Image (tube, rainbow, N blue to C red):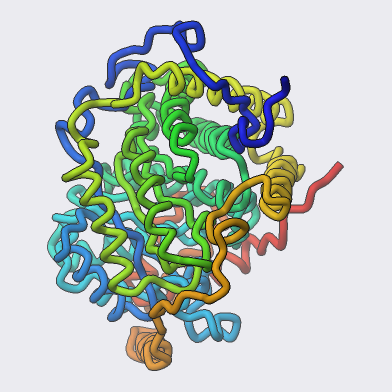
Length: 526
């Protein structure tokens, strides 16, 4: 009898009622050994727990700095910076195109003055910082480095991650600026710059998170993310970088959804696949380059505006899946994020969720606690096989960049999103509080409100920076950025000097737009 919708995973994997030894006959290597199915480190959380890293940023640098201090005081291990939409698109806060968006989805950063306030009183030599930024990623990293210099922290002591994953912007989010070729140049220039100056920095966080948020299945998230990773590695090798060196600083960013067992298997399959890719395709022999390390975030698209406190349970399940799957750092979403940016109360509940898992859930007691489960091992094998089929299809199209330009990846995600929504509307996929167990009366939830004064303060500061800087020095350094863009030298040293001269993020991006143009959209072609 054919499996019903309830007997299949959301990736279409048919689920058996019982699993036994015949379903997972292959032995699995010990943790810390190739191909790292059971984890990148032999002792995993017994040696060091995952980094608790809450994604935060809103309004201006002052408000976000206060939230970061609050989270650190309440037990967070590292920072994770959310930037507003104008910053992500390379526009200053006073650009007419930024009107109404300043500080709404993250913190507004226009210049070195903003970054100084954002990290004021936070010792950058003692914390690890993740920055979710892509098209202008190199500029925000350089600002971070400059603030570190002001604090007396050498670049070699800075640690963290910059997302720097432009390919998934073309696929899933749309926050790109430049065409793919110069964008990939910026990515590999950042690789080379960090190898020389900021060796402890993870130079890219290859993101499946946003692919999943756009509606992909677990298999598609896995395949498309690793295919993008292949494209970045190929570009780095073409730029003369060593896969053993730059590969050791790559990291990944995955989504953690509600299907607990599938998610655990997905993370295990990701490590196995990446080890195979780095070894067989790129000849990497360094175990640190072969071992996939990843940050996880609970699924924003799974949060519901209806009965929002149900989201606390969803987030806990998703977080536990990420931990059982071996994540290196984790962000847990706040329960009210389907309605607004988190309040301090909801942010604390999200933080405490991780702390309960770590301190009370037994998650740090043993390595790969679900390893050897017939069900988990069978799912790991199935996800690996299905993802590999998709990667081979992308190879046939000429690689990830070509597949994106053809619209193949976008089309696959759109079809999966459509099918998922249709199942929800038909009641085949149950969403508690949405299409089952509904309540007529909406719950009242206190929401975060952005003070309009923060936007005015941001615009005033940006105007003041331009008025008080050395105008000749700013013009000279912007010209140097333009010259570097027209040539083949690494762009980051020129951009660092422009930022040091208090040129703004928007001014530098506008200089690059003038030379490279803008990319309007990714249109499928025959």
